[in-house]
Length: 127
Figure (cartoon, rainbow, N blue to C red):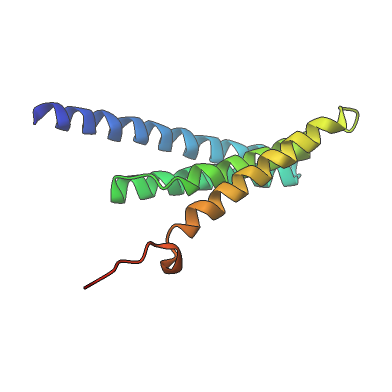
């Protein structure tokens, strides 16, 4: 039983380090935007990624579980940011691949949400 407490303590410590890194990254990005006196869509998407990571940490600390949809939403946001930052002279097929990746992740989120629908659950025969 002692090993379970040790592992849980290590997990909580690691999550707190991730939280501190997210808060530092968020504040650093806000500071950078203030100094540049300019806000781009890519900057806002990066802030959104930090907020989503903090939200995922909050859920983990409260429920001791991570919902798989959080990392998927973060991935969609990260790929969207990558598309926005992409240079115009790059190969257009890269844009198609990134867009298909977003579509696949979005479909995965839909499939994960469908599992909660009552009409898709198997029916039980009560006799």
